[in-house]
Image (tube, rainbow, N blue to C red):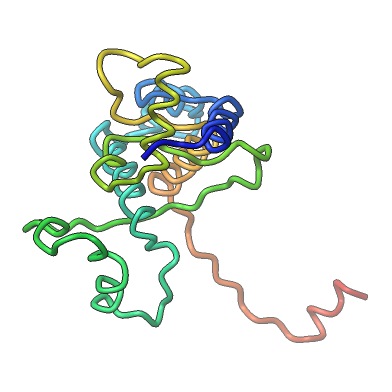
Amino acid sequence: MSLSDKERKHIEEIIKANEWFTYEEAESQIRKYWNSDNNKKGNYLSIQRRQLQKIIRSDIKGTYLKINERKPSTTDEEWLEQTAYKGWSKNHFLPNKIEKLHVFPKYDYLFKENEQSIVLSALDDKFYDRKKSNMRDIYEKMYGTPGKGKTKYLMTKPYLFALKLEIERREYPTKTLYCQPDSPKYILQYFG
């Protein structure tokens, strides 16, 4: 399926508006901005390369399946019938292993208009995601292929920002704070 000139131009504008990172560049950027003073053991970021790739892969798959748009009242069986099997056979889509998916929040509203949280990967072709596959092809025509062959992941700065926050959340989860209810008189003294 070929793109119209208008669609191609729109994709080119999105590509030009974003700063792009290969997986290796993204990993070095993530490690670069960590403040080592905050860690007592000397290695503030203990997450390994495979774990980082698993987080990205889980986010890509979960975003494709739109699990972040799932309503809490929907059961797992209903969700699989609605989403997963459209155009897929059950055996093709769900091999004998079970993978827990997690989509982390994106913060596109913090960036300029065309800057979006985008990650391009080899999974786009497997999921038949034409938009992302076309975007990757146009990117490679514009800037060439970074490294040898196709890169595993190619991501924008907003996606990298969201990924960094997700890793921080996993490495250093916040403690639950409990607030004791005070008397109305005590609370109102701050508003008087």
